Amino acid sequence: MAFLIGQNVGERRKVINNVDEFYGIRSGLIHHGKEVQDHQKDVVDEFFVNVWFSFVGLMRSASRRKTRDEMFSAFEERKLS
Image 1 (cartoon, rainbow, N blue to C red):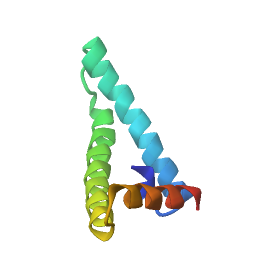
Image 2 (cartoon, rainbow, N blue to C red):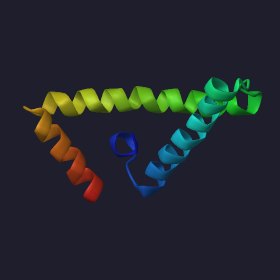
Image 3 (tube, one colour):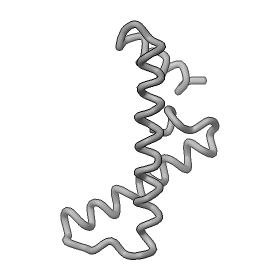
Image 4 (tube, helix red, strand yellow):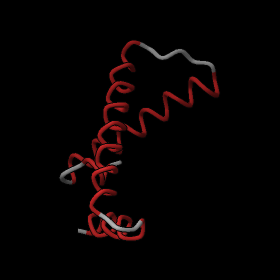
């Protein structure tokens, strides 16, 4: 997700931190029966916005590539740039 929607290191770190926070909330809910607290709802909302933009980015990338391997190579190039 970070490489699909983050345009720079700061944005990518923000996405990564959001995913980490979201999965902590998810784990508490699924594995421990904890309710999502009001202050956590912004994290959940941000996560689903990030998911949406990731899907959009994935579809755009797929439409510009002929094969799956080309698409993953492009991701790898972006990751290493």
